[in-house]
Image 1: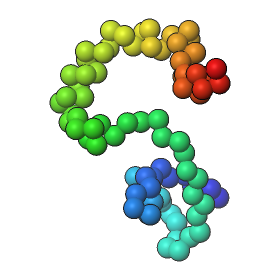
Image 2: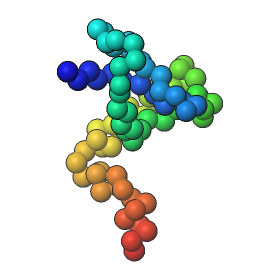
Image 3: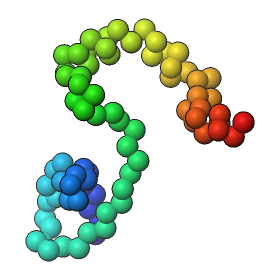
Length: 83
């Protein structure tokens, strides 16, 4: 049986976001690291209230940002480096 639980890697350890059910202590695990697409706003000096203001202010651009035509910019730096 496979059980999937999300976690975060910090300071050399994996912190589980939720506790797995029905697993024995000492059960072996395999950890796969996923690329993070999120930005830690707190590390940028932005609190929850400021983040909400930013989200509201930028919401008018969301339709354009999420349009298929904008995918050309997804790997902009890599594409630019090839020129």
